[in-house]
Amino acid sequence: MNKNILIVNPDRCTGCRTCEIVCQMKNQSSYIKILKNELFDVNIPTVSIKCNLCLEKPLCVKFCVAGALQLASFDEAAILRKECKIGLFPVPLTIGDKRVR
Image 1 (cartoon, rainbow, N blue to C red):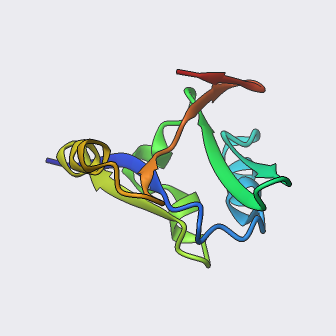
Image 2: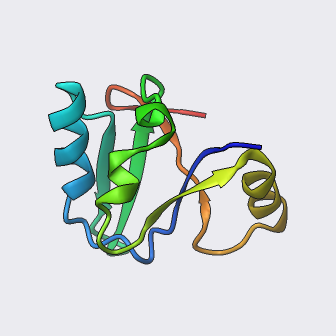
């Protein structure tokens, strides 16, 4: 199966926003946004439902210096979700500034 699910490790995300910049350069609008939670001091990348993962070669993953973003197959993502591994989860989708469940 193709690797087509974006997985994030927020413990690695530094909040540098490089993913946002390269996405905007490629698409004229950034489909990824880093949400910073000041209280817990964490950064959580979120992705718009308009994102097409740069047709299976996402620049956000390629340019993520911290290694917080990676691609996984649907089966790998399902296993991560089933095992509830701390620190690894499928990226939540957003529409504008609203989160989609």
